[in-house]
Length: 335
Image 1 (tube, rainbow, N blue to C red):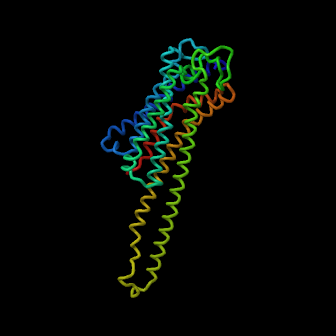
Image 2 (cartoon, helix red, strand yellow):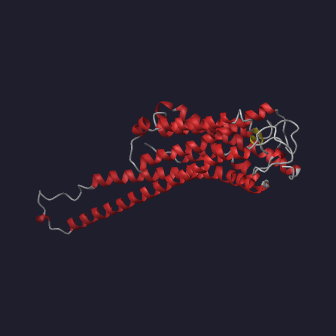
């Protein structure tokens, strides 16, 4: 970040001190709401998945909120660096845990898909699928973070410590060698894509595909409800124009489809609510990772950094917990 002015460096260092605590407050609020009614809420996979999301969001938010403080003191071009190599490694490890977020977002999308499209009960999902959801998140989320420790890839990455080469001039963000050898984090650009952005892009594609499937399922249900309501109105109209003497006990009563129609309508309304909730969580997922991904792709292609993208990265990167809380509070669905 040597080409940035002192004011720009200060701004990049200060922004996470605001957005990080906001995310921490949001994540802790979700955790409090779930755990304060844990006998009821923790019986449902939805709340247990959100518990996993919020725990990891809270941990990551703390370390993102520290911003440049853990970066080794005296690092050139970084404002507010007062840490050591050890503190930088610790921050990089916990920032890498943010990959838990996309994995759990995928789990949440799969949960909605099983409920809405395949009409599975929460009990069946909990028995057959949920344990694998948590196992996958734990294996890849924690495994990728641990992998970075022996590789010594957690170093100064501009606004906080993460996967980067040290010294920063030993290779650029696109992997081209610099004029000095790397002491730590050789081929950091490759590891960024192998254990972070590559998997995240795959999850973005997967989650988007699931949302398309959910949308199509709800639209089919909506069409079925409309057809059923039209049929009932047609039967009612036919009965109203039929002389009473023509009605016998053997004829089916016009209202017999009503219970089925009521059940179908209830199922459709609940599916629609779940779709809206899933879309809002997906919106948070996109907003959180959009600018982060664009910024890193820009760095990969150009080998340089863009100040506007760095600002958006430092602003929205740590905000997932806060934005999830907004969706959580305003989109709860009664079972």
